[in-house]
Length: 442
Image 1 (cartoon, rainbow, N blue to C red):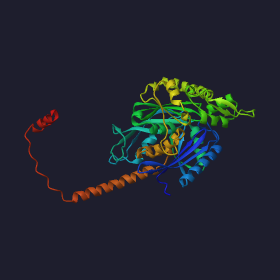
Image 2: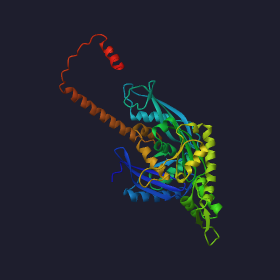
Image 3: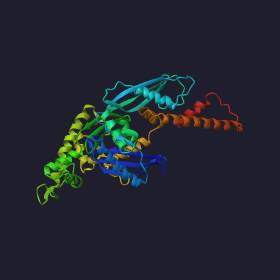
Image 4: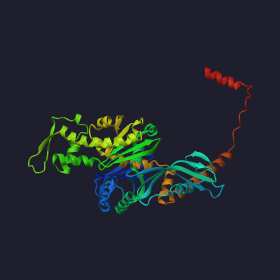
């Protein structure tokens, strides 16, 4: 099977590792395979044991390969937003030949110039996005290729993160026998998929409630503007249930998934279910309301910390409100709890693809959709991060070939006999203006 139009998203989560295989057919991403395995070697969204993480990745990849009936070699990997910094950047290069058109290699070179930053040794550039190009002082240019100039500038946004996270992620993926086709910052990919154009433009807060941590991201003017990571997630809720009810972690996770409510006011005090208590031979009955109170207490803490930090940047005043996603967002009543805590409109995003209708699959699906939707300019800038010149060469060859074809079409059009033009009727002075105003007021 030809994999040229295939995209494989790899979500390395704290509690599970998800793989989504999608095929790009005429601009539409069709999911053809899914892998979902228990995670290992990951803590709070960060790989802490490369060997264990690589084994878990391999299991998830094999599952996706079986369902998609393909061999997976290249993956698009999500990068957590832990300790992510966002800052402006710019770069400038001189075009060698003043009569030469700007090419993909020039775009890649100016992106490389923008990457030259004085970074601390423990940090690494994760992503760079172009806001605009400037050719000889003319700004607001989105694609400078084909233009003629002597000076090319790029103004954009630089994202940097801990070198440890980037290294461990790449190492685990490579140790699993895979090649990193590209990396994407998790909330950046999610925001582009779960928000409509108006929400991205006017401003919206995305909160990903994962197993190891909760990540709040602010998208405004179609750009990632702010990140806040709270180091508590669904695992902490499970541990609370385990400690309070004196039951095993596996049993606590099952209770949360089968009977849990985020808002205790929506749970019943009369409906009970059995709980296997350590040291007791017979299960103990527990009410839904009591379990919901345990869950709500932990979520309240997470929401309060996120609200405090979001208030500092006035993010809760944005008209788009809050969108919740991630595995914890599947808890019944979480929308009402978040609305009461944040004081703004809240909704939960759930993918609408068959077999993926759970908020925990949002990130893996967002990775393939985001990468599949990148333009040639975006990919050229990304290639400056990896040091690969292949894409720049390929796009230049395509553009040159298209230019030759256009020239040939122009020549054939010029050689064809032209139809005789109709004689122009000379209008009286002012007749056109009178007709315009007459039509306008009619």
